Picture 1 (cartoon, rainbow, N blue to C red):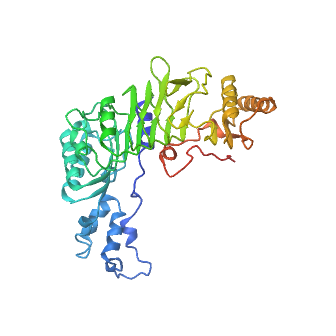
Picture 2 (cartoon, rainbow, N blue to C red; picture 1 turned 90 degrees about the vertical axis):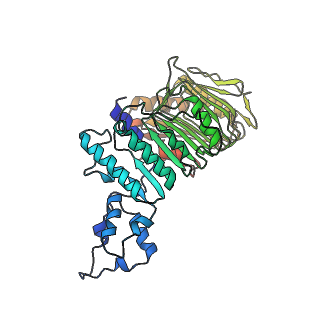
Picture 3 (cartoon, one colour; picture 1 turned 135 degrees about the horizontal axis):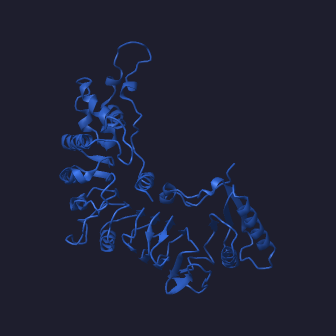
Length: 440
């Protein structure tokens, strides 16, 4: 993928901004009655703080000049900082078209805001600068954020170099609850003892097109109470992802190339999402699941490249259908396939022989299965005809379905676009991230 495509993918997976850039300070002071009375300034302090906290950073700071009534309100409000709002004009995500002087001006503006405001900073988004030119400024920003309190931090180096070293002072941002890092190298954790000194409150971590070593993943997972861990647009860094955590509920590998994902010990893990993944040199992605008794969502499994191993048994071999009905996980039998699985979604279904055999395997064993959904490219009539023929042959085949209530449905999707999005996959409030409805 070209760097522009990678950056667009990374930005599409970042948390949503809490402040809208379209909010207007001048609109807030427009009077519908045509008089000059300043009714907004007469509002209680709590409401004024709410107004200021909803404004982009430039407008929020300008409120100090409105009147003595507003002076000090800005400094008393927890500040949302989005560096793009400090630009004279909105830059492209690739950073193209801007001069070196503009990047320095932006870095100086961020430094000024962080130094002048006492904090805390519930959300800081630094995604618009070539930080290779401002390493000292970045280290200073992280020190200020650690000292003044930071809730969510989104940092993307725009766009090179990939091996930009992130200062290890970020590990001491104790108040961090959500952290997304892009196009950089995660700091070495070797000199930091495992314990509450490293991210003691971090609940969500996204590593986007960045370098993070296997040992650093193990260190972070052992230190912090993470619930969601995502690796986005990774390129075999690391090739093996070890998952050992007593708090993780969701793990995602999104549009990444890797060789192995090993769930070693994850008693709270509910969701394991693999999307757009690509295998390493041997063409196989090995997925091993040791202890994960609460795992209820697993997908998407690519029958051509994924090798799934549960406990000591190979359940699926890459390229063939080779399913073992005796594979066990503590308290789970084939991820509860006999007594727990309720819904199966086959995305980009083509009606191939391997697909048909795997469908039969599921239907013959899943006693609680209620629905099986087949998603096909509605614009490809050849695939639609083949998928329809395959399902008709399945229904007419004389085999015993384990569930008497299972309904089969085929849904056409325009362009064959996948049903899953990053935000749906990471939203733990949704019980079924694969939910789809028929497109009109």
